[in-house]
Image (cartoon, rainbow, N blue to C red):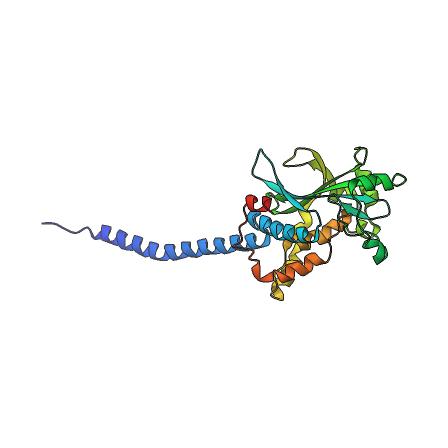
Length: 272
């Protein structure tokens, strides 16, 4: 005669009761981690979102002839946004495509709207003035999950500017914002894609800088272009100024921006 093992039934019953309590708790833990991860993604946007904002930024740059473009490397799929411009000692900036860029100093409007000079004219008409060639590159940092501004500067004869010269060129109103000294904020590093020495604005403070901007945009239910907002704040410290039309364009394209679902391939950026 078969005698049931009540001890076994009891163990199975207890095990079932354990899983009935444990599994919902486990699902709750997984949900919390997913929520925290999504919050982190929203705060430190990913590379696809970075490329999306760059694409929108470059579209407007092409409309106004501001000289920004997207470049990729043959050795890897990574790309970056870049611009070249010439700056004269008096503060006037002329882009590499011969289009007049933003003026650093408070020049009269008539001077700011004068027809731009091409590269040859810049060389010929400013022999008595030092002309500096600036290259600005915007890359995505996988470590910090934020954009990073790389740049280098040289005279027309090709001789590069030292960090000391770069710091001397920073406007006084920005020097106090760059911590207590240039060495902590502006450093020289190897370009992640080109492998060449570039100056870089360290990205460790970028999230702290952008958090109030993003929170305010959410508060008023208005999307912003992260690249436009960020570059308009950090760029002027190293002679890079954005026309106001970038901000207006960001508001006009407000309905087309989706920070979480946007995905732009490098090929699309190259086609701009």
